Each structure stands twice: as C-alpha cells, then as structure tokens.
Amino acid sequence: MSARELPPLEAKVLPFRRPAAAVKVRRPSAWLVLGRPFVQALTLVGAPLALGLWLLTSPTFGLESVEVAGARYVEPAWVEAALAPHLGENLFRLPLDRLEAAVTANPWVERVTLDKRLPDRLRVDLAEREPAALLRDAARLVYLDRAGRPIAPFDPARGPGDLLLVNAARAPGEPLAGAFEIERELARVAPDWAGTLSEVEVLGDGDFRLHLGALDFPLLVRAGTLGARLAELRRLLPELEDRYGRLAFVDLRFERRILLQPDRVRT
Image (cartoon, rainbow, N blue to C red):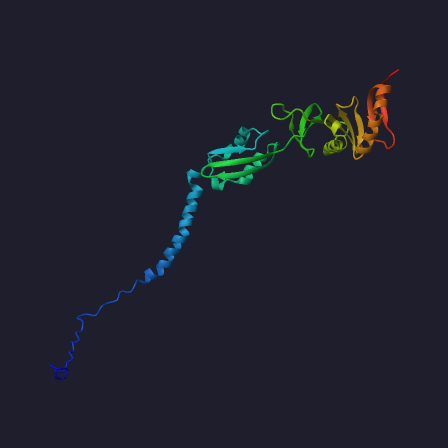
C-alpha cells in the first residue's frame, strides 16, 4: 500500500479526571517560626556561658602545685609557703596581683613573672637582686645591690661572702651608690689596683677612702680625679718606699699636692 493510501491518523483525547480530594499544604507553626531564632541564639550564647561557668567552678582547675624557677638566694620553699593560702583556688580566678605582692615581699626578689599552667599548676619565675657589696652597718653586715640599696642581712649560707666592703659610718645617710662609681672609676684608670680593692669608706661630698691590697696604706680620693692623681702617685711610689717604712694614709684629694701621714720615718 502506498503512502497515499494510508488512512488518516485520528487524535485521541484522554478524559480529564478531577482528583477526589484536594492536596492540603501544611504550614509551619507560628511558635516554631518565632522560636527557632531564639533557640539558635540561646545555643550560641548559652553554650559558652555554660563552658565558662564550668571552667570557673570545676575542681579540675584548683591550684595544686607551685613551680619555682630562677631561685638562687630565695628558698623555693619560702615561695611555696607564701602562696600556700591560695592552694585549691580556681586557676582562672587567681588574683595575680596579690600573688605577685606576696612573692615580692621577699627582699631578694626584684620582680616576678607568674604563668598559669593548666590544669592545676602555677609557674613562678623570679628575677632576684644581685648582691654587689657588703655594707658595714653598726654591728652587722648587710648585702647591697649596685644601686646602693640594702637587700638583707649577711648570711654566708645564702649569699656570697667575698664582696667589696662598703663603710658609711663617717657619713650616715650619704648615698651608697657612690662607692660603686668610685670602684668603676678606679677600674678604668688603674685596673691592676682595682682588682685588689677590698673596702670603700664613704666620707661624703664625693670623698672616699680606698683600701687596696696593692698598697700598704689607704688612699683618700675624690671622685672624678683618679686618672691624674693616681698617675702622679705611681711616679712617687719608689721615693715614698725608699724614705718611709710605712704610711698611715696618702691623701690625693687636693690638686697639685699629695698629703701623707707616715707611721715612722726610716733613718
């Protein structure tokens, strides 16, 4: 059969069938819509608050031990005893200013650094004052630092004993730092003599009496003049040794002249 002989195609229309019941769309509850942001906010804010409350109250973070570093002159047991009242306190709530004040009450402590180590330790790093001399104070000896400040009474079991002796009995109230300034000046102009300096007497107004192992007599000097005056003394030493058996002192405080007091004149 040819294409021309094919019967025409008939269009079929399917009948429209109405659903028995309309589909209902469920809308979310207004309380749910309004409450969801509140729940989210409560979660975001409440969780950190709960965590913070736990950190600040949990016995897990109660202070159990104190670690002391940098102690040479301060006994670690002293530091532990000073901080003992704070044992058991929450590490996050420890009042560091009060702890620092308790430790710096020790005269040897210059400054202190406190470091909280979770969960229950405190590290105490000490910077101690360094003894530079011994001050002869009435009937006792007291350690001095380089600033001329007293530290604590001399204790051979705790601090060094081979230190420069500073005597201010003739000038009470005079700043003691001048003793270290004259020591430094001596080290610049006469290092061979400076190594034998054992005692500095503070006389006041920039005057000092120096006791040196290199000389058999003490020197009375004025700060700022050692360079010229000691050079002149060196030139005269052979003559002094030849003429005098022993000198009570040599006074270099006056310009263009040297005063000396012999113990006896060699005949």
